[in-house]
Image 1 (tube, rainbow, N blue to C red):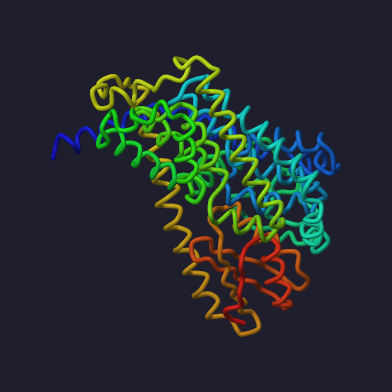
Image 2 (cartoon, rainbow, N blue to C red):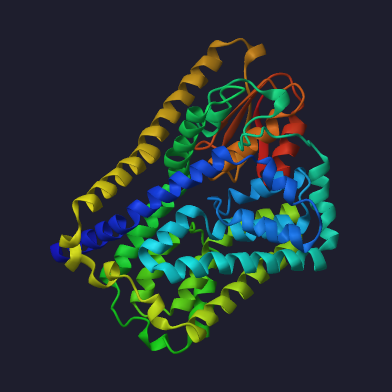
Length: 455
């Protein structure tokens, strides 16, 4: 028993050490993109209903570190700002499959060829999906256009979605620290980038990254080496099996990497591993329901179809057209615990720093948030009825991008003075005299179910 536990621990440590420096670089770059790139850049280039806007949407979405739940409210926001239907679909497909953090992590465990092929596959799949929607889902334009016509507003140019120009409440917010002043300095923006990259992003993807590493280490130690060897020659069958598992489940772009490379070590073809990396992050049961509701049923079917076709085509291309030694499994997986002594001092430093950042984001910041929110509830009880918040239950929020989208949707409603969104509890606290039906409608248009709990 101890041998199994020791082997499992060694495999887990080795994978974390291999990924840590590249993950931290990816999170840092993601923070810079979030803080220094104006949000208006995206909507400004995505409005025309043509192939050019579809290509731009895919190219702009690839480096962004948004998961499949976070990309939906972002794409709805782009639609509200005038982006075309096909461009929004292209953005929906490309963004959750990649991100600078997952590209860096792909390189760390799977090598340069995989790190190059993955964003290229996402780019062309997104372009194909956007073209299909522009050509064959024109009637669905009315659905997203209806959302675009209601509650239109401008975003601040800092690249954050949390505030509207008419409703700045001058709150200090970790997700929008660059907005804390009207003219943020370089150092204030840099601070916002670090907070986003190493706190918010880790809050969003950290849990799934840890789950992916735990599963990958278990596969490495517990699954026989020839487990998938019998199916290795049936490459298309490999991909269909992976699709059947990957489409309904949720796995983020970064968390899917250790799982894919561990399965490759057990005999999964490189092409099937790419299918997991593409379909797993881009499609899941929750995103399917929301996309169908917000963008229309035909758009949803073309969205899923384009991801399946793109994943299988590029997977077959890897298995049949490219040298297989380009996609050899990392020695971290094949050697497992036998290479634990290979870790250098720098490996341990990066590993420990990543572990501390994960603990900070998933434990301390969550505990701090719960404590603050408990304090808010006590404060609310002490206020008179006139100052008490109206409470809404919001279903479907899974990350800080979801939280920002809900807050942003409510913030522009006439009469709203202040909005507090509790991501963990799934609630929104709205202050000020307002129309409750407008709040429920605004949140619904962003893809979330909302009900009034207390007034």
